[in-house]
Length: 386
Ligand SMILES: Nc1ncnc2c1ncn2[C@@H]1O[C@H](COP(=O)(O)OP(=O)(O)OP(=O)(O)O)[C@@H](O)[C@H]1O
Image (tube, rainbow, N blue to C red):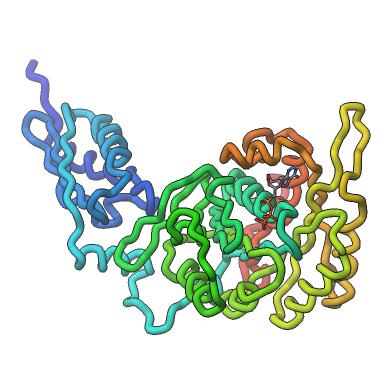
């Protein structure tokens, strides 16, 4: 009995379906949806020729695309081999991709910050500290990694003009790529990252004056393709300055998370952060005390930097703003926090059972709650007994 080969159209459909499972590594949407598959032809011998259009010439992720496409298409029954020809999108094709990513509409006249729109479901947290070196960036990257590990879509804007240590702490040296005037953020440990350091060559000390900084921040929020984020964290420079004011203008709905050590001149920090929040009408989501104590081998705690700073800041802020500002957590001093950061894998991922990780995860849990109000929304209740 002759063996019937599957009709070609079916194989072609299956190849299309297989291609639709391949995401562009940067944009994280199916290549078929992005208009990147120019053609996919199945030859009579079962050899599939795919013509793929890259968004930019010399796309660094070309090999990854090749591997992913080959794996997906080879798995289709009837396919004997896969050949991929790479081309590059024309400016028109890139423009139409950009429009598709922006939701169909033409580019707006006025830059629109998606997270500041009324319907935005993204919770925005600006992580601030009174002074440098208290572990603001460490807290930011650990919260980001913890939230991503919980399955949330998370982005981080590293706006710390003095430090920009976020990419290193999250283990990426990748540079963002551009599609027309959209910027694709690198991703690491499931977190999308844009850092002010990615736009300055090497470690060149750049003097960021107010207007320039405002434009940079605006670009990070408007031109970066963040996709649908659940949480956006911003690592602010220490102290209060131009960035805080820009932030308030660009993201009036951002909530401020204050990081302090037990020793910090609590009243002073609280007063300053509180005054800014009052001026800008931003909500203070809470205080994280970092470097709270060092656990000694006998289980006792050594309070290296004193005690009570976090509570004092939270109480003082509560008084200043007239609304409850909670102490969200106390993170112990632990050399593993620094080592994990230096290695590019935050401690919440590298050593999830360490007390510092447990404390950071508990803070992340409190921040993970969706901003959506329940008013007028279906509650999705299940029948009793299920
Ligand atoms: N809980 C902790 N235990 C041990 N080391 C820590 C802890 N938190 C932060 N560190 C270390 O302290 C140093 C300063 O932390 P980090 O860079 O996060 O602070 P920062 O407030 O963001 O500083 P800046 O704003 O000056 O960049 C880093 O080397 C970091 O690894």
